[in-house]
Image (cartoon, rainbow, N blue to C red):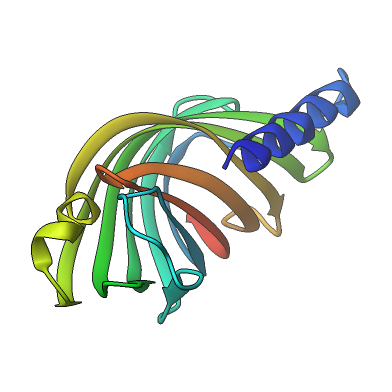
Length: 195
């Protein structure tokens, strides 16, 4: 997670340094909706048991977003992500859970070149991990399910405006803790429509 954060910050720094001062903005204000598909990252922290393998993720991940651009550079967005189910196996049993995330974020946009822009995100997230099944003693996995609310950053998106209403984008963001001992992240590719 630390390496991902450092990489995202480096990418943002390079994009801001390379952004021409004279770049004309092709971006309007107004409401938008978006849909992206991608993958979730689940990073369980130590719960005092020996792990017997990597975390297994069974489903694809989808994200729905709705928001509003107040200016060509500043906006807000609400999001919902169904991160699917994951399984973590330990020597004394296994935990299977599903994760859902909702968020409200502040957006900042910088034009890189013509119709290409970089969007930075700071998001207040509320995540919930629901236990689906357990083998072994359920009490040993109590830190892998539950709810958590926090402000997370950075989230970054590279956006290309196809026409006046549609754009395509690639995004990566931390979604924070989904339980006491479970961190999450999301990366995807999607479409956005502006009204």
